[in-house]
Amino acid sequence: MKRACVIGWPIEHSRSPLIHGYWLNAYGIDGVYTKEAVRPEDVQAFFASLSERGLAGCNVTVPHKAAAFAAAAVREESAKAVSAANTLWLEGGQLHAANTDTYGFMRHLELSVPGWNDAHRPVAILGAGGAARAIVFGFLQAGTQDVRVLNRTRTRAEELAKEFGSRVTVMDWDERENAARDAGVLVNTTTIGMNGEGSLGIDFEGFDPACVVCDIVYVPLETELLARARAAGLRTVDGLGMLLHQAVPGFEKWFGVRPEVTPELRALVVADIEGKTC
Ligand code: ATR
Image 1: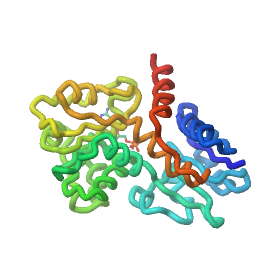
Image 2: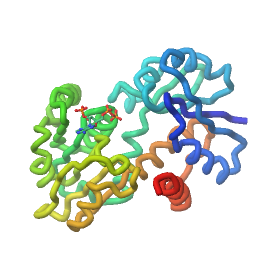
Image 3: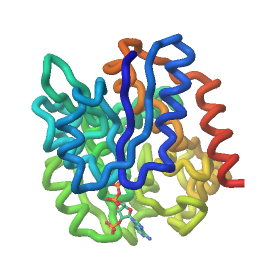
Image 4: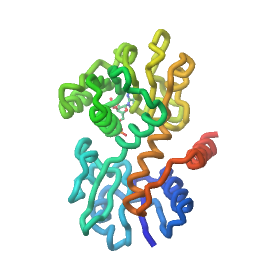
């Protein structure tokens, strides 16, 4: 039997077991995917004991992503770009690391809005944490020439921009509406809007309808930002698709099948989100 898990501290709220459990069942694979609460002081020992525990690998969530990157012997470009890993697997006796958030976000964007990059317009990213890094990297890989980063704490945005080079520029947090106005894509990577709390305060009136508005927050599924964008006639991309697609590469590494993100899987996770938020 093949085994994998997700680790974090805390971990109770992870929806990864629901996603991977669905695929194990759908593909008739003899495997298990569990969640494990691992304290920060125990995480290195955990990574060293994957093989002993019979694990093919694991997903890694907050606060262990930097530690996972550090522990790996072989690191994919996706992990190097953000100095963090969310997916680990054993291969040839060595620990390999990837960061599949970039893939998850970009894949969901491409599937949701196939022509998003036709006009080669600027992109505006709100936030400067790990998720912002993964997404900035995705747009740079996709060839975007003007990636604008805006963060409440400007110095964090400046550090991020320095790492990624001249195609990434920093704008003031207060400029977010202007930064987005002529953008082809606006992405919220901050926690604003999570559980219905806070507001980005962006008024989309007068925006070019070609602008695509994305949120990586997926509880609620339609955040205040997405609701405002939709009301103004803009296309929106929710955060749930990123969560589902980022899970694909790990499942393939551990269980040997490239799984599909189906409407049935999405409905299952939506029901879970709505069940817990109603
Ligand atoms: P992750 O690594 O998951 O992306 P993070 O590093 O905790 O998460 O980053 C959270 C982001 O949300 C940051 O950009 C944070 O801004 P700061 O760098 O200024 O802290 C942003 N954020 C959280 N709460 C915010 C708020 N109330 N207003 C503006 N930005 C907020």
